Length: 295
Ligand code: NAD
Image 1 (cartoon, protein in one colour):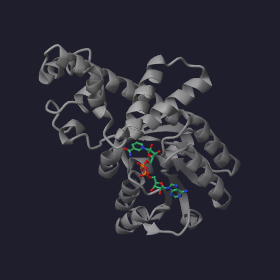
Image 2 (cartoon, helix red, strand yellow):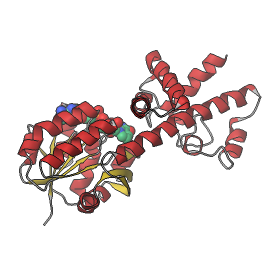
Image 3 (spheres, rainbow, N blue to C red):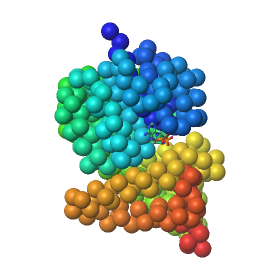
Image 4 (cartoon, rainbow, N blue to C red):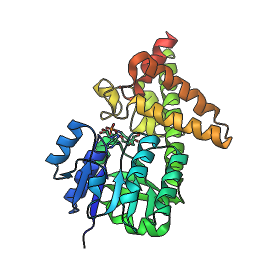
């Protein structure tokens, strides 16, 4: 029997993810606080509900895709008393590890299965159904949820027990924030040395400087035609979201005692960039700020 899915949080990511579940044949009951998200969901064939609690009727799987840890904990705490035993609860938002573990504990106390399953791939991946899921939770929960995750993504990586998906996401994005800052600095230094963008790209993208920040999201226009630099830094991955993830990495570093000096410095760079009003641009546009600072 096809399982009915309750989907709470139908924004830029959740909307297209829920739409892909409908395309895969799942009945989806959705809720979002915002009118535009609600309108788009109706157009995608999602059965729109008036509250999070209403989405639960007949649902055996619940998915949340919300901004931050306090939103997720608040929604899970509200609905958990109305969720049937054995329901699979999945949170796909990017949140702090402690909140994720608290969500697992809530589900466990209600005799439900649970997964933290944050994603990589952005809004384009959400629409195309090509997301990567980084999953934390027990094997039996993942076995039950795998087909649903695969209807929204291309790769599902089991990272470990409760909270491990969020831990992997936070560490991955700290690498991304640092490498993008490094790639931008290298292009600015190259400009000062009279090196063409193409020459630096041709060398670094095929040698030891190779990373996603240069080969896919190259911060200068030209070498990678699909990178945001070619469309005036329209995201892509907005600098404000990068800052959110960098802050999560620094909270995690603080609470665990890990030394992340480069992560801390990169967080400060994105904080300043955001304060200067660039939070809505792709994070690679931090190169313009660095160029300005160097002038
Ligand atoms: P978004 O702001 O577009 O969507 C969040 C939605 O949650 C909004 O529509 C909002 O109205 C809704 N919402 C908030 N509180 C609610 C509540 N109590 N009940 C019901 N709905 C509620 O954000 P997004 O870009 O879709 O991101 C969602 C999550 O995915 C975030 O944690 C983000 O960090 C993560 N993420 C985003 C991207 C990206 O490129 N946008 C990529 C990877 C991960």
